[in-house]
Image (cartoon, rainbow, N blue to C red; front, side):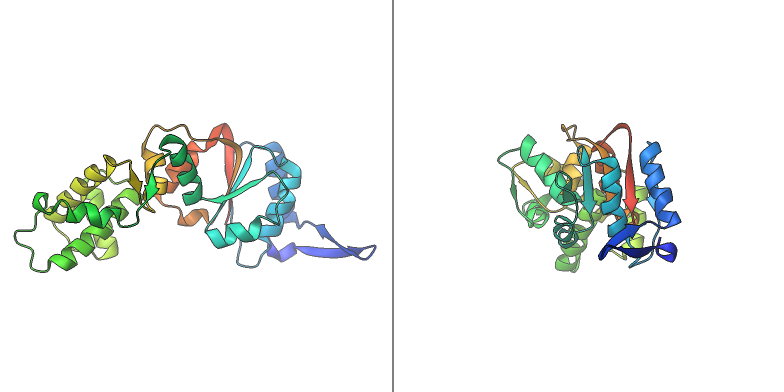
Length: 239
C-alpha cells in the first residue's frame, strides 16, 4: 500500500489520491463478495485506506473489529457515523448479555473452578501443586481459545507453550472446561469469545466485516467472526 500512496494539495486542502494498490482494494470492495486479506507494513496507510473504503461501501451494516480497545477508541472519530467499531471481546460480550442478561464478569472464574474441584483432579502424585494449578489454568484458557477437543490437539498446545505435560493435566483441563461450560452465571475474558463461538446463540450479523490483524486471530475468534458475517458476504482483513 505504502509504495505508491501519496497526497496532493487542492485549493489549500490536502486531498486523498489512492495508490494503484489501494485502487485494487477499493475495486474489490465495489465488485466482489469474496473474502480479502490485505498485507501491508506498519505505517503504510491502512487506517486511511479503511476510512476511504467506507465511503465506497457505505456505513450501514458494516462493522470494524479492532485488535484492541485502544485502537478501537482511536478509530471511532475517524470512521463515518454509523459504522460500528468494536473489539472481538467487546462484541462477544454484547451478544452474551443479550442471551444471559444477568451474567457478570469474573476473571478468576477458572482458578475458582479449579479450587472448588480439587477432589476431582489428578493431584495424588503432584509435587508442586501451585505450579500444576498454574499450568492447568493456562492450559484451560488455551484449549478454549483454540477450540481443542482431542488429546492430540492438547499435546500440541502443551508443547508449543512449554506447559507441564501428561495425560493427567489434559484430563483435568477437559474436566474443568466441562464444569466451566455449565456455568452461565459468570464469565471471564476468554468466555467473551468462547461462549458465543461454541453456543447456538443468536449473533448479530453484518454485511461487511473488517478485521484488524487477522493473522493473530485464534480459532475461537475465527469461529465467532464467521458467525457475525452474513451468508454470501465477506470479511476483510486490514492487516
